[in-house]
Length: 192
Image (cartoon, rainbow, N blue to C red):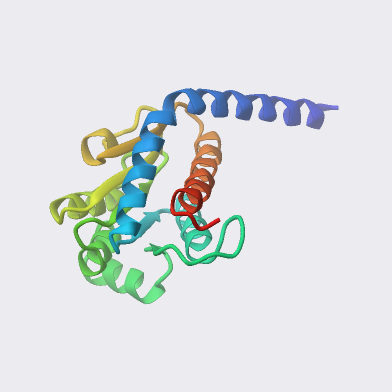
């Protein structure tokens, strides 16, 4: 059955991507966790953003942080910059699509916040612009990306580069890393 072969091949490819990520992302993940803990303890927040599937990941992670991940607990300050349709469309119309996240970072961010740009290619212009704005304002910049990282290693204080080539594998690891961040933050902050 051809579909069974596809099923098994995709799982094997997924396992390989996860294994490679486990080996390469432990150190940057620890740095992101430490920065996030410091931000939340300091009264700051985590902002996330990306396009398409990465926008959905930003929303998913922000929701897990503000509502709950493992069990009921105090909220963790997080926001996805992908959810305000009025801000997105006004910025896109008046300033250009490349500025939709940078404008929100400039309006809502402050030094000590953690901003996480999510881009499988590492080159999305609106993610690049937002990270530049965040860095200029004294925020901690992080990026979930893949392949060779694109330009993220030069823009993100903490680049988490998934060592995979396919968008689907990169996205699968991004949500795994996002879930790990949620659970680890709950634990480190003593909320569970």
